[in-house]
Length: 365
Figure 1 (tube, rainbow, N blue to C red):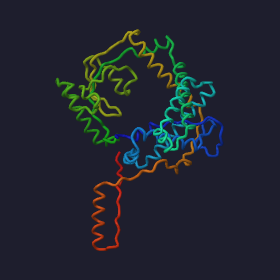
Figure 2: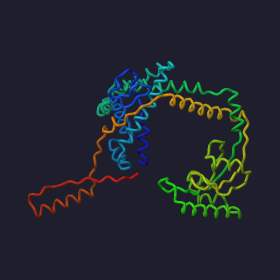
Figure 3: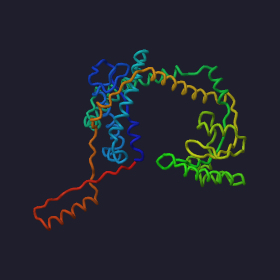
Figure 4: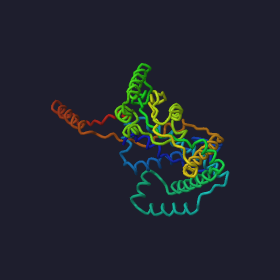
């Protein structure tokens, strides 16, 4: 269950009613429209149910080990997701973007079949998920799909835009690198003293390469980038805008077969080798460029929609909400220790009673 907390927060789905309701119990306002505490709690229930369906009821013990404050982390994430969903729903309402009726009917038919299954219905009932709340989620999921289709259509580039984009991105390089990291295991930057040691090692490797050392062998033995190290440092082909600027500037300035001196970036020191330079023909990469440009334009449109919305969040209204009780399990070692203590106690005092111990949760990331 590595990095399970990130999975939990990623599950968050922010359905929220767009009907008028009182702002008195609002946990957030989006363009003046409230997200109520009741709606927020429904979302928490849905996310709790989704996680337990995927990982089982004991999932929260694992999550708590990674982050004892996980409930606040998840609540903050759920609220953010609900705000983003409300922004989309408000925009859809203003622009007459409606759910596809066929998709909605299919969802409701599937929901009816699901609720007819006693086991599945019991799992919904256990977490307090009502049929009404699930139908509301289905309707809003369908609106989200309609919004995605709307954005994709609006973002579709013209032939002129595609050709301009091609001229800027027709050149690619096939490169390899050796990365010597300047961050520690937790991702924090190293001290200047340690960075200097890393730079010294990078210089040594560069000198070995200048004297004819095999690049792939040095990459496999020394690179901190596991994805490319196993392939001799190979990154494959990439265009502009795909790498951090410091790396990109050097990679595109090198000639085929040329190796760079150590290049500093936020990740560490890179030694870059350009294996090949490629200039693609327009018709060969047109579909790929169209997909890239459509995605870029869609992101810009969504960002513009988000920035045009006014958002107020009232986190103080959700801080006391506790959506799951984590049961601390008793380990066999703890139990034997407890039994031993209980036996010793009984030998000296016939009135003593058995006690129980619970496993102390560690803050395992």
